[in-house]
Image (tube, rainbow, N blue to C red; front, side):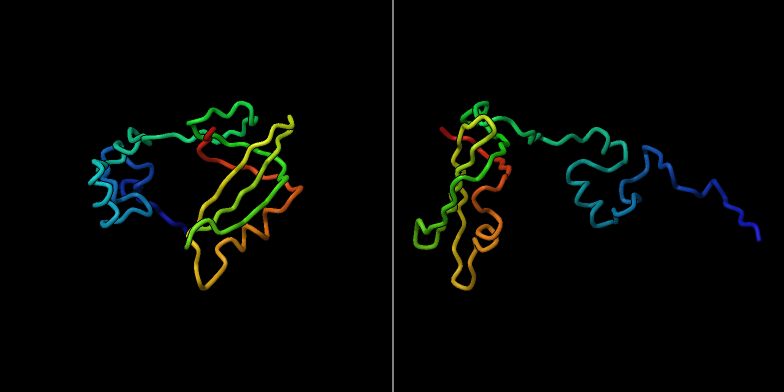
Amino acid sequence: MTMVIDKSRVLWPPKMETPIQFLKGVGPQRAELLRKLSLEKIEDLLFYFPRDHQDRRIIPVREAIPGSKAAVKGKVVFVDVKRVGPRLGQAKVILRDETGISIEVLWFKHLSFSYDVFAGFKKNVVENTWMACYGMVES
């Protein structure tokens, strides 16, 4: 048995003028949302760039600049979880990188009466383990 394919009906590769809703995974509803961003054709996607880029390359703690975001990696030397307000919890970790410089890392979460919001944190973040963090550096 031989199968004959009519190549005039094949939609791949799509033409740049093809409406975006005909891409796999994009239907009429998603196409309408994308239209609000002025994305109507496949060509429009090629020239739609993100408004921001997060550089998450790991850098030494000494190179972290206050007021900017940075990713650092270090060995956990101290862990503390406590309540700092009526419904606010804080987790504090001190990381020491390969050069011996330390940095304090903080997380805040709204507390819940029904479960421990830091349960996974307490289980996975323990002293003498290595971890990487990304966030705003403050002095």
